[in-house]
Length: 292
Image (cartoon, rainbow, N blue to C red):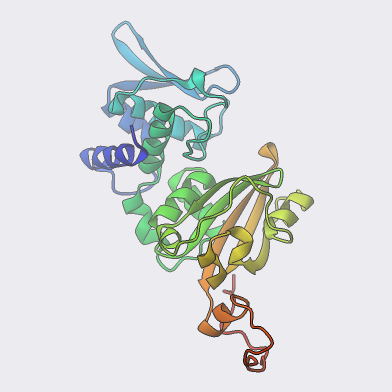
């Protein structure tokens, strides 16, 4: 099943259960689908599963997991039921990861259920009005995560989907970009983010990884530092980044601003000795970074 299909099914599911606000009551949703939720001691790396016994259906949740992950797990298991997809957790090369929906090393069934769970936990219709006029950054995402009872990863990915701005969420592990999620506007602008390479030298993520103190770092860079697309040269980037010690990961929240015509032209083409000289630089930027 395609992720988009799972997301559409999740939206119909939310409508059927009249879910219109946050935080979503995941236990009530489970009960409405005929499940009783039980918190149990499960093997390390196992987030949850479903079980039928004596005519009753149960969702078993790892009692050692953080509450945000437990909420996601309940919805993930509901997804298997609603979508009619078998559980193939054991075939994944990594433990079930409740923080992001990604197809990297994940069976398609699990990816679809993750997409369903993310949409239910942070519904697009609910988050969209909340992010209007809000900057895409660590503080905004942290506040929304508390409101939705979801991980910052889940909220960041849903923020990206709902945003009309050129923003992106980038996850790097030990200094190498593992995941990159561009907003629809950024994709439409023709900017394709780098993956599988080292984070740009001097970026906020690099500083956060070196410090390992969890403090928010900021940096400004060029669009071409994060993408080899020609279109990226038309953008400047403001980055906020934080460090997550358990996974040795950094999370970068990128906001891209289009350069003015004069700035976009400068450096995009080279002039030979017969070309006219460029106007003298004034030192004033036509784009000024947002204040955070």
